[in-house]
Length: 157
Image (cartoon, rainbow, N blue to C red; front, side, top):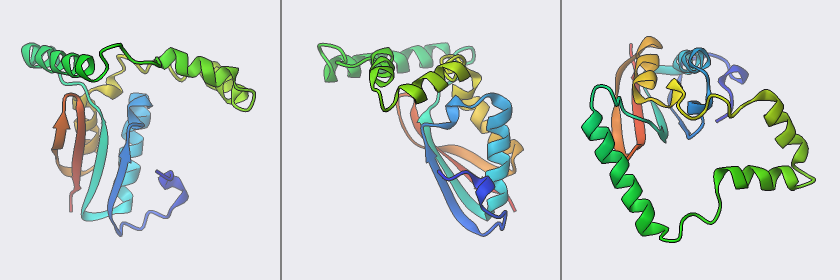
């Protein structure tokens, strides 16, 4: 998605969408991004956000464990020998590529992976709360498969 800061806040967009990126943002940046996106949407406009959203393990521990179990079983069925490439291995390959090594080094210096796993920005509740605070009057899941969801926010009037 093109950063909204490059576009005027004209409030005439009918929809916006993004996938698998905002869970990397720290909480304050996530809230600021949703607030800025809200200024670009007209009342009734939709924001669709597809990502890996973790539910609340403290509120629904059994449901969360069941969901994780279903994901693990599907992974085992789809990849019986495991994944051929790991997250760490992928980044090691990027760092070894002369054309990409500089970008990988910059990523390492910025510690972009330091808060990713376990960050509150990966939690469903964090996104729902941030969208509501930004002025989205309705927030809910349109589609879900395991912890992959499409979250929809309707801009209030």
